Length: 167
Image (tube, rainbow, N blue to C red; front, side):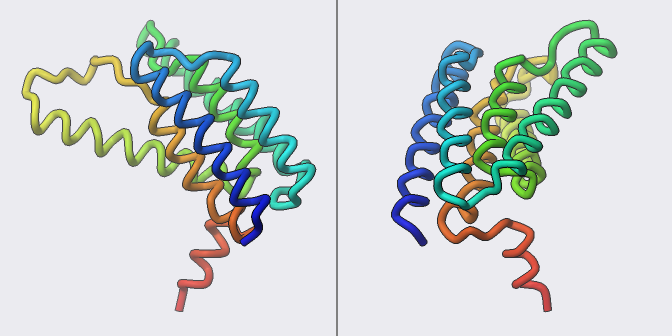
C-alpha cells in the first residue's frame, strides 16, 4: 500500500461521492465533476504507476463506447432515454482510475447494486413501477470505487485477487 495510492483513492471517493449525491438530488452528473474525475484519474495513471496510461485511455474508449451503445439501443427500442449521458461520461471518466482490468468489475458491481435496489424497492413499495426514474450514478460511483480500490492500494486487479482465491 502506498501513501500516493491511498490519497488518490480518497480523492476518487470524494469526487464520485459528490457525483452520486448530485445525481440522487437532481438526476444529473455535472460535466465539471466528470472532467475532474477524468483529469485526476489520468494524472494518477501517469504519476502513480498503478494503471498503465494506455490501459486507462483504452478503458475510457471502451467503457464510454459500451454505455453509448446501451444508451442508443435502449432509446431505439423504448423511444426514450433509459441511461443519461452523464452516466456514460462517468463510466468513461472512472475508467481512467480502473483501466481495462477494472471496467468489467465496475459495471458488474454497479448493475448488481442497481438490481438489488430495484428488487428491495419493489418488495417494500407495491406502487414502485419498473418505469420509475432511478439515478444510476450512485451505483456507478460505488462500482468505480470498488474496482479502483485494489489497484490504488495494492496495484492488484480484481482478476488477480480472484485468481489468488481459486484452489
